[in-house]
Length: 269
Figure 1 (spheres, rainbow, N blue to C red):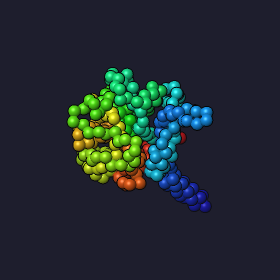
Figure 2: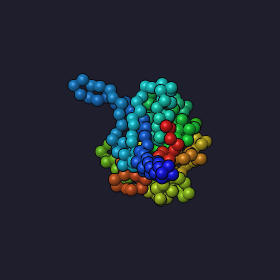
Figure 3: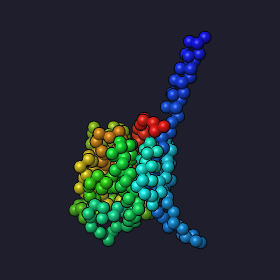
Figure 4: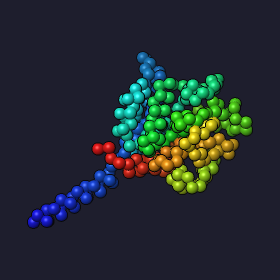
């Protein structure tokens, strides 16, 4: 009888572990931006476009928004509770943090956002936490690791195409192709070395940070993807895959790869 009860207990625990592995949905932190909402009494908000959280949810993760204005100590406390991170698109990184120059085309600079995202990027690299950096995010990642940016691609890069689609163009508009290096993590995850992408940015990586490997280029040579080597999942893309997941299954794979890697990380409990 004792042996039977022991066997039943082991069987229940094994099946419970399998259940937890199947149903565990990792917590994916998303940094936010500040916006002024026009209404009868205008208010400031911290927010994020739903396309990011929808992509994370579709990939099986649970999105959590990270507000601005927190100390590094508080950010560390949040970071430790997260399974993965998304650094989304948005306004320009302040040139002060990478010894850049001010440019008349710069817009949306927010030093509090820079502080939050630079902290998260450095911590994710150092602590081997899975993350996906999108548009502004890949620029933040490069700066966080010691790289620099083109303050404005069109006015500073000879022969560059216009990478900044106007607001009248849908966010899922495919603007140009990219070439992805075979054998890289992003090529393996997406399952291709060529793709059409949307393009909604006027800045880009200039000097590549020492710990970053360039993995994709636009036809004009602008860097479209980079990754941190010897890391479980550390990918940055210059386009907006969150706006393409319903049109192109390969774009959802970027979020699925993030979520699946996050789910395999050691438990924090």
